[in-house]
Length: 258
Image (tube, rainbow, N blue to C red; front, side, top):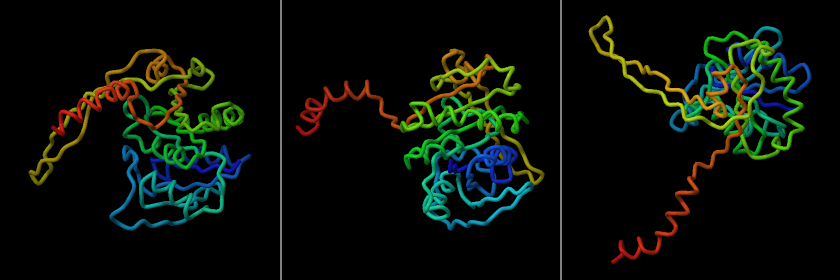
Protein backbone atom coordinates (compact mmCIF):
# COMPACT_ATOMS: atom_id res chain seq x y z
CA UNK A 1 0.00 0.00 0.00
CA UNK A 2 1.03 3.60 -0.54
CA UNK A 3 0.68 5.24 2.87
CA UNK A 4 0.94 8.92 3.78
CA UNK A 5 2.23 9.19 7.36
CA UNK A 6 1.71 12.43 9.29
CA UNK A 7 1.38 13.60 12.90
CA UNK A 8 1.20 16.68 15.11
CA UNK A 9 4.04 15.87 17.53
CA UNK A 10 6.59 16.60 14.82
CA UNK A 11 8.81 14.65 12.46
CA UNK A 12 11.39 14.02 15.20
CA UNK A 13 8.91 12.30 17.54
CA UNK A 14 9.28 8.67 18.64
CA UNK A 15 5.72 7.84 17.60
CA UNK A 16 6.09 8.64 13.92
CA UNK A 17 9.47 6.90 13.76
CA UNK A 18 8.00 3.71 15.24
CA UNK A 19 5.09 3.75 12.77
CA UNK A 20 7.40 4.42 9.83
CA UNK A 21 9.69 1.53 10.82
CA UNK A 22 6.86 -0.97 11.24
CA UNK A 23 4.88 0.04 8.16
CA UNK A 24 7.80 0.45 5.77
CA UNK A 25 8.71 -3.25 6.01
CA UNK A 26 5.73 -4.08 3.79
CA UNK A 27 4.45 -0.77 2.45
CA UNK A 28 5.56 2.32 0.53
CA UNK A 29 5.50 4.98 3.27
CA UNK A 30 5.81 8.72 2.64
CA UNK A 31 6.40 10.85 5.75
CA UNK A 32 5.38 14.52 5.75
CA UNK A 33 5.16 16.05 9.21
CA UNK A 34 5.67 19.32 11.08
CA UNK A 35 9.25 20.32 11.85
CA UNK A 36 8.14 21.42 15.31
CA UNK A 37 5.52 20.42 17.86
CA UNK A 38 2.02 21.25 16.61
CA UNK A 39 -0.19 19.64 19.26
CA UNK A 40 -3.64 21.19 19.81
CA UNK A 41 -3.48 23.23 16.60
CA UNK A 42 -6.71 21.64 15.41
CA UNK A 43 -7.44 21.99 11.69
CA UNK A 44 -5.56 25.28 11.27
CA UNK A 45 -3.82 26.03 7.98
CA UNK A 46 -1.12 28.63 7.36
CA UNK A 47 -2.21 31.64 5.32
CA UNK A 48 -0.24 34.68 6.45
CA UNK A 49 3.40 33.61 6.34
CA UNK A 50 5.41 31.39 3.99
CA UNK A 51 5.88 27.67 4.51
CA UNK A 52 9.24 25.97 4.18
CA UNK A 53 9.92 22.32 3.41
CA UNK A 54 13.11 20.42 4.17
CA UNK A 55 14.18 16.81 3.81
CA UNK A 56 14.80 15.07 7.12
CA UNK A 57 17.01 12.03 7.72
CA UNK A 58 16.91 10.08 10.98
CA UNK A 59 18.28 6.82 12.33
CA UNK A 60 17.64 3.44 10.69
CA UNK A 61 17.09 4.91 7.24
CA UNK A 62 14.13 7.09 8.15
CA UNK A 63 13.58 9.89 5.66
CA UNK A 64 10.75 12.32 5.16
CA UNK A 65 9.80 15.93 4.66
CA UNK A 66 9.49 18.42 7.49
CA UNK A 67 7.16 21.39 7.08
CA UNK A 68 7.14 24.67 9.02
CA UNK A 69 3.39 24.45 9.36
CA UNK A 70 0.45 22.61 10.85
CA UNK A 71 -0.58 18.97 10.40
CA UNK A 72 -3.27 20.01 7.91
CA UNK A 73 -0.62 22.00 5.99
CA UNK A 74 1.50 18.84 5.81
CA UNK A 75 -1.29 16.82 4.22
CA UNK A 76 -2.05 19.55 1.69
CA UNK A 77 1.65 19.86 0.78
CA UNK A 78 2.05 16.09 0.45
CA UNK A 79 -0.93 15.81 -1.89
CA UNK A 80 -0.34 18.91 -4.01
CA UNK A 81 3.46 19.18 -4.12
CA UNK A 82 5.71 16.48 -2.67
CA UNK A 83 3.84 13.47 -4.04
CA UNK A 84 1.22 14.99 -6.28
CA UNK A 85 1.68 12.12 -8.75
CA UNK A 86 0.79 9.55 -6.07
CA UNK A 87 -2.57 7.99 -5.40
CA UNK A 88 -2.32 7.17 -1.72
CA UNK A 89 -4.18 4.09 -0.50
CA UNK A 90 -4.53 5.49 3.00
CA UNK A 91 -3.34 8.12 5.45
CA UNK A 92 -2.25 7.38 9.02
CA UNK A 93 -1.75 10.16 11.57
CA UNK A 94 0.23 9.42 14.75
CA UNK A 95 1.26 7.85 17.01
CA UNK A 96 0.17 10.76 19.19
CA UNK A 97 1.28 11.31 22.78
CA UNK A 98 -2.04 11.85 24.51
CA UNK A 99 -5.50 10.46 23.84
CA UNK A 100 -7.70 12.18 21.27
CA UNK A 101 -11.22 11.48 22.42
CA UNK A 102 -14.54 13.10 23.12
CA UNK A 103 -14.79 16.87 22.56
CA UNK A 104 -10.99 17.15 22.58
CA UNK A 105 -10.84 15.85 19.00
CA UNK A 106 -11.79 19.38 17.95
CA UNK A 107 -8.41 20.61 19.25
CA UNK A 108 -6.43 17.68 17.88
CA UNK A 109 -3.87 18.20 15.14
CA UNK A 110 -3.60 14.41 14.89
CA UNK A 111 -7.30 13.92 14.12
CA UNK A 112 -7.36 17.03 11.92
CA UNK A 113 -4.56 15.65 9.73
CA UNK A 114 -6.68 12.53 9.25
CA UNK A 115 -9.70 14.76 8.56
CA UNK A 116 -7.71 16.49 5.82
CA UNK A 117 -7.19 13.06 4.27
CA UNK A 118 -10.92 12.40 4.63
CA UNK A 119 -11.61 15.64 2.74
CA UNK A 120 -9.35 14.38 -0.06
CA UNK A 121 -11.31 11.08 -0.07
CA UNK A 122 -8.37 9.06 1.25
CA UNK A 123 -9.16 6.38 3.86
CA UNK A 124 -7.68 7.91 7.01
CA UNK A 125 -6.83 6.78 10.51
CA UNK A 126 -5.69 8.71 13.61
CA UNK A 127 -3.72 6.78 16.25
CA UNK A 128 -3.16 8.01 19.82
CA UNK A 129 -2.07 6.63 23.17
CA UNK A 130 -1.65 7.90 26.72
CA UNK A 131 0.60 10.93 27.16
CA UNK A 132 3.01 9.03 29.42
CA UNK A 133 3.14 5.91 27.21
CA UNK A 134 6.43 4.67 25.75
CA UNK A 135 4.87 1.69 23.94
CA UNK A 136 5.27 3.16 20.46
CA UNK A 137 6.99 0.12 18.94
CA UNK A 138 4.31 -2.27 20.20
CA UNK A 139 1.49 0.04 19.10
CA UNK A 140 3.08 0.45 15.66
CA UNK A 141 3.20 -3.34 15.34
CA UNK A 142 -0.47 -3.58 16.29
CA UNK A 143 -1.47 -0.95 13.71
CA UNK A 144 0.57 -2.76 11.04
CA UNK A 145 -1.20 -6.04 11.89
CA UNK A 146 -4.59 -4.30 11.91
CA UNK A 147 -4.06 -2.62 8.53
CA UNK A 148 -5.06 -5.62 6.33
CA UNK A 149 -8.28 -6.07 8.33
CA UNK A 150 -9.08 -2.37 7.96
CA UNK A 151 -8.39 -2.52 4.22
CA UNK A 152 -10.71 -5.51 3.75
CA UNK A 153 -13.46 -4.13 5.98
CA UNK A 154 -16.63 -2.61 4.49
CA UNK A 155 -15.89 0.78 6.10
CA UNK A 156 -12.41 1.21 4.55
CA UNK A 157 -13.83 2.86 1.43
CA UNK A 158 -16.48 4.84 3.30
CA UNK A 159 -15.81 8.53 3.78
CA UNK A 160 -14.82 8.59 7.45
CA UNK A 161 -11.86 8.84 9.82
CA UNK A 162 -11.12 5.86 12.06
CA UNK A 163 -10.03 7.37 15.37
CA UNK A 164 -7.97 4.79 17.30
CA UNK A 165 -6.99 5.28 20.95
CA UNK A 166 -4.86 2.67 22.69
CA UNK A 167 -4.41 2.46 26.49
CA UNK A 168 -0.98 2.37 28.12
CA UNK A 169 -1.00 -1.42 28.47
CA UNK A 170 0.66 -4.30 26.64
CA UNK A 171 -1.65 -4.97 23.68
CA UNK A 172 -2.41 -8.52 24.83
CA UNK A 173 -3.37 -7.25 28.28
CA UNK A 174 -5.92 -4.74 27.01
CA UNK A 175 -9.60 -5.60 27.17
CA UNK A 176 -9.68 -5.99 23.39
CA UNK A 177 -11.15 -3.76 20.71
CA UNK A 178 -14.31 -1.77 21.34
CA UNK A 179 -16.02 0.14 18.51
CA UNK A 180 -17.20 3.31 20.22
CA UNK A 181 -18.96 6.60 19.74
CA UNK A 182 -17.37 9.98 20.42
CA UNK A 183 -17.89 10.60 24.11
CA UNK A 184 -19.06 13.67 25.97
CA UNK A 185 -16.19 14.09 28.43
CA UNK A 186 -15.52 17.71 29.30
CA UNK A 187 -12.41 19.52 30.47
CA UNK A 188 -13.01 21.98 33.29
CA UNK A 189 -10.55 24.64 32.17
CA UNK A 190 -8.55 26.81 34.56
CA UNK A 191 -6.16 29.65 33.76
CA UNK A 192 -3.10 29.54 36.02
CA UNK A 193 -1.40 32.90 36.59
CA UNK A 194 2.32 33.10 37.42
CA UNK A 195 5.00 35.78 37.55
CA UNK A 196 8.31 35.63 35.67
CA UNK A 197 11.68 36.83 37.11
CA UNK A 198 11.07 40.27 35.57
CA UNK A 199 7.83 40.65 37.51
CA UNK A 200 5.63 40.21 34.44
CA UNK A 201 2.58 38.00 34.62
CA UNK A 202 2.17 34.98 32.34
CA UNK A 203 -0.45 32.27 32.04
CA UNK A 204 -0.87 28.55 31.48
CA UNK A 205 -4.04 26.65 30.68
CA UNK A 206 -4.76 23.87 33.14
CA UNK A 207 -7.83 21.80 33.81
CA UNK A 208 -9.53 18.71 35.11
CA UNK A 209 -11.15 16.05 32.95
CA UNK A 210 -14.75 15.14 33.75
CA UNK A 211 -14.92 11.75 32.00
CA UNK A 212 -17.74 10.08 30.11
CA UNK A 213 -17.89 6.64 31.71
CA UNK A 214 -20.28 5.11 29.16
CA UNK A 215 -18.51 1.93 28.00
CA UNK A 216 -19.79 2.54 24.47
CA UNK A 217 -17.89 5.84 24.35
CA UNK A 218 -14.22 6.32 23.51
CA UNK A 219 -13.22 7.51 26.99
CA UNK A 220 -15.37 4.87 28.67
CA UNK A 221 -13.65 2.07 26.75
CA UNK A 222 -10.20 3.44 27.60
CA UNK A 223 -11.10 3.64 31.30
CA UNK A 224 -11.75 -0.13 31.13
CA UNK A 225 -8.43 -0.81 29.41
CA UNK A 226 -9.94 -1.35 25.96
CA UNK A 227 -8.73 -0.19 22.56
CA UNK A 228 -11.22 2.38 21.28
CA UNK A 229 -11.98 2.67 17.56
CA UNK A 230 -14.43 5.43 16.62
CA UNK A 231 -15.69 6.17 13.09
CA UNK A 232 -15.83 9.94 12.65
CA UNK A 233 -17.52 12.12 10.06
CA UNK A 234 -17.12 15.87 9.78
CA UNK A 235 -20.60 17.07 8.90
CA UNK A 236 -21.39 18.96 12.13
CA UNK A 237 -25.03 19.59 11.24
CA UNK A 238 -27.61 18.79 13.94
CA UNK A 239 -30.22 17.22 11.67
CA UNK A 240 -32.89 16.85 14.36
CA UNK A 241 -32.69 20.57 15.12
CA UNK A 242 -32.57 21.36 11.40
CA UNK A 243 -35.81 19.47 10.75
CA UNK A 244 -37.55 21.49 13.47
CA UNK A 245 -36.07 24.77 12.24
CA UNK A 246 -37.29 24.14 8.70
CA UNK A 247 -40.89 24.05 9.94
CA UNK A 248 -40.38 27.64 11.14
CA UNK A 249 -38.89 29.10 7.94
CA UNK A 250 -41.97 30.62 6.35
CA UNK A 251 -43.50 31.98 9.55
CA UNK A 252 -40.19 33.43 10.72
CA UNK A 253 -39.51 35.14 7.39
CA UNK A 254 -43.04 36.51 7.27
CA UNK A 255 -42.57 38.15 10.68
CA UNK A 256 -39.09 39.49 9.95
CA UNK A 257 -39.95 41.08 6.61
CA UNK A 258 -43.19 42.72 7.79
